[in-house]
Length: 425
Ligand code: FAD
Image 1: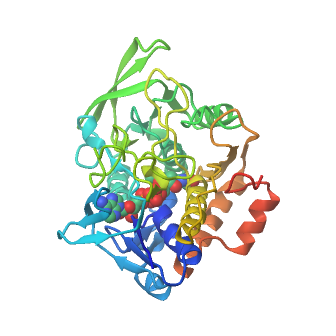
Image 2: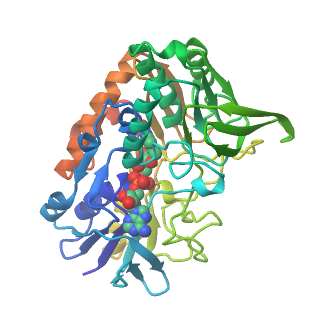
Image 3: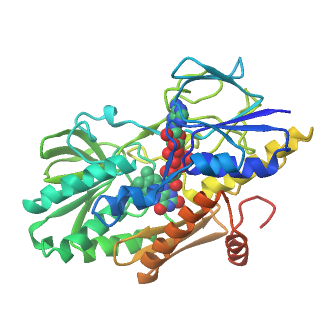
């Protein structure tokens, strides 16, 4: 009998628990440790920020499904991982031992790296559903007294899709409320060009997203570094190709949301051999840590180098399908190790995304995630908005049901030539 511990019950950790239960032997014990019993579907957070969704509509209490699936569920935050002792220390001081550990802790939001950034300062956040709910309160107050809007991402950010989505969703909602004419909008981003997305673009995301911004009268500034934010003002610097200063901009705002840089969570930060300097977990092509070979990692917490040099640092996004491919590879590899075998499965890290614009959207597939690619396309249309609503319902249903992938999803992806494991292509 082996002890398998999964740390973090977000997108990666929850699906990991389901797939691990299926791949482990009956006698193995699976323990899921997470700061909260509640799963939140982050892709719907931009809708929460404008009141199109209530928080409770995109949350799932995982307690009963974990009980049903015979997964021990510890709802307490971990204070520290002790890899040399094969233990996870909880906030209470209690220690949970493991034979194998899978880290799925997502990011820590590094608002503190930029003065005035984030909900404790002057800008809103949609990275967590509770903050998106607070952003909705701020949005309603803003609508009583509209003014300029600044949306975007900070230097070192690695998640750009939700910023574009919120800009377009705000535009749609303000038009519905007949307020759009009172609201000058600016999109600021460290990306070297609109639609780079940390992936050096996918298909023609540059053309599609620039056209969408132009069509909606949203101005943009690229190669941006946010210097500081104060009440109603944001100072940003725009850099040239050679990283010299091109211009400084003082942007007034009445409502702002800026995606922050991410770093690893405190429970793992600074552990020699386990993490890089930003606290992300080092993993080989099998998702296994090279130093501590009984530790695997999946999701946003995994260290992935940037796609190339840019004037302002831009991180690589870890998107949902890419994370699911890490989950599936890890479950196969751990399943083999538990039976005395060897790791053999490598995730594809393919990116398959639906970006909603409120009344349309862009879907893209990047296979593999980083260029040059075998499959590289982006398509636009109203259907993307409805596809995203359908996907939200489907995903929440599968989380509640304790399923990682339905047969329907499996065959659909196969028919589209999109795979989770290398060698399946
Ligand atoms: P998370 O889902 O963040 O989960 C981490 C979990 O670990 C959390 O439950 C947290 O409480 C727990 N945890 C952290 N530290 C500890 C600790 N010390 N002890 C115990 N538990 C801990 N991707 C797409 O493909 N499509 C989208 O449309 C999309 N939209 C997004 C929208 C937003 C607003 C954001 C922020 C991301 C979006 N993503 C999207 C990217 C990605 O799919 C999500 O960020 C996804 O939730 C990442 O999964 P994860 O498991 O790595 O981390």
